[in-house]
Length: 86
View: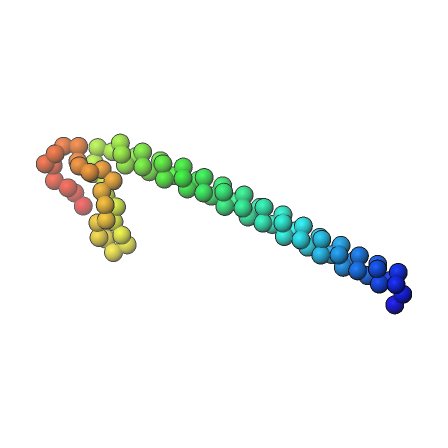
């Protein structure tokens, strides 16, 4: 292989690597943008649920997957002394 052919071969290889890195960069940018959008949507939904729970006249509590109560979102029912319904 002549020196000129070797240089062209290396340039072709560098072009291929450059294209590959460019596609990877674009893919990462897209992934990051999607994650940021998901994070914003989750934060918005959390705020909606928080607002709903804080303004509900009923006692709202959180429980785990086994059904054990973990924490109240509202600390007391609207009418003190009213029974809690499950």
